[in-house]
Amino acid sequence: MCQVDEDGVDLLAAGDGSEKSLADRVCVKCGEQAVIHLRDEDVKCGKCLVASVNQKFRAVLTKFQLSRSKQTILVAFSGGQVSCALLEAVREATTIPNFSRLYSVLYIEEGICDGLTEEACQKKIRNIVGKCRYIFPEVPVLVSSLEMVFAEDSIPLSYIFPANSTDTAPLTGLTEFGARFKKLLASTKSPTAREELRKLLRNNLFRRIGHQQGLKTLFVGDCADRLAVQLITDTALGRGKHLPLELGYADTRDPDFTIVRPFKDVTMKEILMYNSLRLNENIGKLPLRHYSFRRNCTSKTEFGKVASVRHMETRRVRCLGWCSF
Image (cartoon, rainbow, N blue to C red; front, side, top):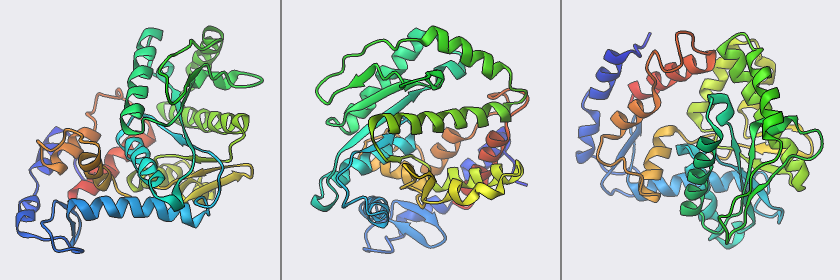
């Protein structure tokens, strides 16, 4: 079993010297200087890596005939590495005539699950909107809060950012819904139950907002690493029946609202380098594997003495993934 404690992280960060050999290797596609070693003999230069990620994204649009449809597509955005890469791929696709279409970003604030104050949540929302504006200035951003899942009629979307505005308006009903949400969260008996409840409510909110806005498609930032974690988690929890929908390109359980995973075949390594090249993320000062493993792995105490199944499998999958880099 791979070791994931502090000593194990240091050993993996040190590596076996494979990253040093990149100086002597060339891209398998164009013959230019390689900048990233993905797996085995798959090494690429920056230009070919960016083209590969964008091509995988556009292939999903073509697969589901989304490039022909003129309907607006929602893009789930959390501000993380994967969602930033997804939004950049969306922006890049809009520059191509055959893939040009309308998009809206949807951000669900989940600070209540982490015990954040209202002021902290407001600051977080401003940071998220700032990231959206930096990556895709023209896209409208819709913001809601996870506790709004208790709204009986329409979901309050008071935070609406038109393309030419950054004004905010306070959400209504936060106090009432927040108290009910905290009570529900406190009723769970394990970290795993809380994680699964959080995911269930988030997906439910996605669908309700999609129906409310009259939209039929949502893009989510599920990469290959995250889906590997989902595979192990669902198997451990005895939910193998739903694996095809949980891991496939599209979740079609709701016939009127489809959740699409454009980055299903893109690994976290590719995403980190893609962000470094396209969004000028400041990760060039550290070796990619060293940065990525420390960035994504957690210490033993970060989630308390008892971690959820999802967190444990996330650490395991990332450990296995970076071992071969």
